[in-house]
Amino acid sequence: MLTVNEIFHSIQGESTHAGRPCVFVRLTACDLRCSWCDTPYAFHEGRKMTIDEVVAAVDRHGCPLVEITGGEPLLQDDVYPLMERLLAEGRTVMLETGGHRPIARVPRDVVKIVDVKCPGSGEADRNEWRNLDALAPHDEVKFVVKDRADYEYARDVIARDRDVNAYENEIDEKCVELLALHQPAASDLRFITTAMKIVTDLERIGDQAVNIAQRALELNREPQLKPYMDLPRMAEKAQAMMKESLDAFVARDTALARRVRGEDEAVDALNHQIFRELLTFMMEDPTTITRAIRLILIARFLERVADHATNIAEMVIYLVESKIVRHTVG
Ligand code: SF4
Image (tube, rainbow, N blue to C red; front, side, top):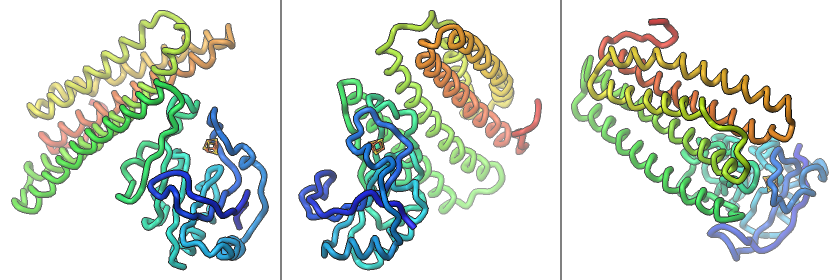
């Protein structure tokens, strides 16, 4: 059963399919509240329909192109069988999603139009960055740009993603080639598998950097809440940990890797200290809440960068000593 806001026949106005006749199936409900939303009527209004009833309503328009939109269509579980059914009947099926729900379960043949929410939407911290890695060649990404800051954000996301993905693919391909052609054993095999895992951590660090940049853009539009002392210290430590973990990998230096592991506690302590301090600000003056939350999020993202650096350091120890130290002390 689906809750459907409206089904109508019109001209597709967006994407590379713009200009084509299209049937739109708008599903009810959305868990975002974009500042510029033009379909708030889809948040609550709708009627229950079975998949058969939706397909029959689509059929009446005799149109081969269908877009499922919202609201947020991926909030309703029956959207998946609906997409399968429409594909099975030979239609081109498009799905527009806000970009904060995982798209992994969406059938591969569906053309996914995935939003990346820019800071001007007020929902940029909800972006699910892993969706960008799950896109098929026929899928598309949509940015709604409200102002210059949004434009620069969109441009940076595209550039960053292109660079990081290119490096990630290059390293993955090189590792697979080494495995296939040279059938390495023991330490060489550990080196290749370690490199493949490190690439994933580096990609996640890239995601955290984008998250920090989003909050920084928002904070730059507002008066500074307080002089920043611990946050720059935390950023310096997290950056140093990342650099040292990679140096340890290159030099196969387990002493340095162990030092990086030990530094994680200091970053965690700074994170707690920042949280406690900002909590006091929020309790004393509620007008500081929004800015304080942005700063708390930045501290949390930095803590995750340090966690990824720790993962890399632990993999270096595994590489050199063939010893798994994750979840152990020392
Ligand atoms: S995701 Fe779409 S429906 Fe939801 S609030 Fe944003 S613009 Fe509106």
